[in-house]
Image (cartoon, rainbow, N blue to C red):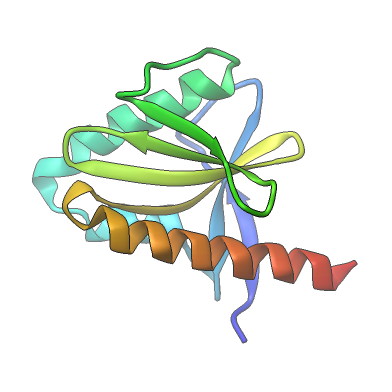
Length: 128
């Protein structure tokens, strides 16, 4: 079974804490950033600014952020750019970035996001 945790995203300075999911000591955002093609790095920086903006209590247009309630009652976020996507959840007092992906593989990435989210929440519940 995978080991889950979180760690702060140092690039985001906001009122609300923003963390990334860590699976087996690998930060999901860090891994995504390292595997990202060079041409998309500026888009990722823009998406992180959207996350920061939203984490400061501001609203974004639906072209930049989609907020919706998950089937499990957990608020989910999809931050968007032309080619990239970041999926996050709301946890009490913080946002947790779960997964990054591409627009062209959005449906498969979204399924992976939900599977990781479910495993992460289950791991939190088993610690209690």
